[in-house]
Amino acid sequence: MSLAKLMDTGNSIGRRLLLVALSALLVMTTLVIAIAMVLPAGLYVGLNNVESVSQGWDGAARLSLFLKFSVDDRAAEELRARLASLETLEHRLEGLTDEQVMAELGRPDRHPEAAQKARDKVLLNTFRSEDDILLARDGKLATYDAQIRIAYTNIERLKAWLETQKKKAAALERKGRKIPAKLLKEIENTRHQIKANYESILRQEKDKEFIRKKYAADLARFRELKELKTAQAENEKNTGQKRYDAIVETVIVCDGKVDCDRAWERAKKYARKHATTRTYVDTRKMFMTQPPKEKTDLSITVSRLRPEPDKPEIIFMDVACRKQVASDTWCETEEARKIRNEFRRHVLGEK
Image (cartoon, rainbow, N blue to C red; front, side, top):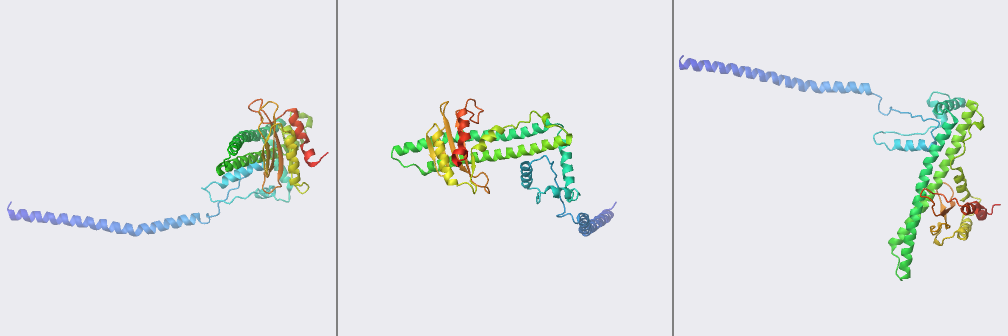
């Protein structure tokens, strides 16, 4: 083949390859342009369809949570607080009355017997016997008792620490040195913590009394529904009732009938008279004798407390003796019981 024909053939092949490449490029360009034009429209249609399906969803989602009637107010409030703390939900929590609950369930509130019927059903479904009710009650009371024991342990620890702080301050004074502001602040903080723990104990005891009353009502209704006699529950004795009664005997509520300042001075005088340990705290809100060291020692603390901000101030007396066993939280000696029994009568002049 001559050189001219060879060059002519090469040129022909090159033109064909160029045409194929240009055709492919044109097709690809057309496809890209088509996709670019169609994709936004498709997305718009898709989004529009989604919006149509979900129209009216925003703000319409609602969850109603119904608790058993056996759940007490404290437990319900704790659950409400936990739900309110969830950051993943946008919510507005509202508590409903029993009548509102009936309305939520489609029952007219003009028929209170419907609410009672619902409670009765829950009561009978929850408990099979009187013992079940008493065990449930005692279990809840035991939880509060554990918290009270912790508070008393904290008080004992804080009193011991306060005694150490006071001795340190006294030693500085004997040396003619000024007590540092930091130490004075620490002493004040320790007193405040002791008061806070006493207030916690009183709140826990109040909650325990609410539980006793609630389960007493449940028990009475259960017996009525089952047509049982009261004598069938011989083990109905209220757990911790004796201790609760003792605490009530050492509580004075400063309502309109009580001159709190006068009662406070009489309470401190009573504590000085009956405590066997020396006074080492005497402030406007707290009077305290040293912690018990000997087996026969009786230490008395009198505090002006406000366990609930919206309720009247309370004067509370606590009698402590040396522990016989580590788990003891309540001084049960005959002398301690006598001091408690006479407290209100002496301070208030009761007969």
